[in-house]
Length: 556
Image (tube, rainbow, N blue to C red; front, side, top):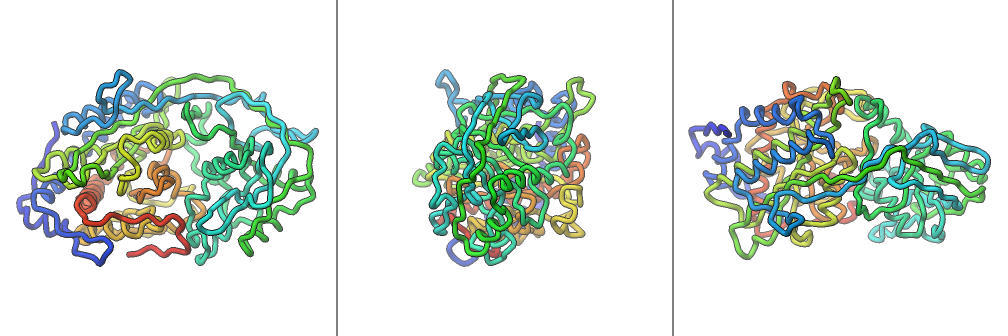
């Protein structure tokens, strides 16, 4: 049973939660008293009880494709049913269901048998990182394709003038001019073009047989591999975490990442200065791709284990009240999986903040909205994704196979780690500034792609008083922007924000436990989210999407 202790004065609640009107293109009006009361009734007691259940030892860290995560999935579906949401999916027999199947391939690379080789020089892990779901033996010439980015809206194409068909594409990580606040690539922040998956899909579209990500030789930050090693915890545990991939993934070429020494060896063999190439691209944003005149690269990948399984996104719909607008969708989301346990369960990665907090948050809002005597005009799709920790697999699956049309999906709010106070950790030390006091702080991620959505959220917060922080929109080191489930929807031009309370030393460690959650702060974040969703669900206009943010400063 869920406990809802209503605050006495609904008029005071309405005044507190309501945001004042803001200038076009979006407007936030005071929310009705019953709506304010339902949001204020989100109980810390309920949040604690639900989160304690999801992090119990019996769920063994909710590893995707394992029984503990299946139990979490069933719990979310039962909560959606109890709240009265309509099933959003269809099962294999054609019946309405809260579960959307996500078929996966799970595999474990044979690191002793796998290698890459340039002529007679062979490299084994950890000289490179990466694996592929199928055994692979490939030999092909090398083509350097700059940063591997094609952005017609900016007139930028690293593949201009080169032919990658039948070749292995070498591309730098990140983006050009990433330390320039006036850069065409969102100033000093990442754009959606900086992630390895987008680079790999672009290489595939240009006919490449594989893509290899290179650490930028002139970088002023740790490489992506070095950054991951700083996390520790489950990232570096032995035996390694299982690797999973979507069985029907649109990407069907392998992606590997090189270390600095291997990168230098390959460019030296081709008589090319990689640092000079990076400097030339960064200087004038013109393509400097070239074929590398080396021996062909041989990639040999084998898997020691390979199996198939099915995990599930959980999704329920609260239909909109306006027949003319009910076909339009808002999404509020989280993910239910985490990093599991050791074989004998001696060590359990509980995943309280990451992401039992987001799962419980979606469930709490589902109950709150379903209990309202009035409903927003637009429909809300409550979603808890599968296999986020294995590479955003559930959200990529739903973006590829949407349960409601993406063309009429107006906005998305994603919860991933909304339960803690941000504190310094090995991952962030020396890389990003953390405010001294984060007890009331919430990081908003995604504003450059939708200043309109940012304006609604900021206006909705004016009565609640959370400290909203936009600094991760200016990050190009931690790659935060593409590390949660809102990102696949940004790739489909949907205004989408990630609500995130920040990193801490327990991130991806066994010590991420329910007793460390700041439940009062979490409740305020859910009240902000509900207020913003109400505004978005009833506004006359919808947030615009900015496909190519250029040196954008966040609107506050």
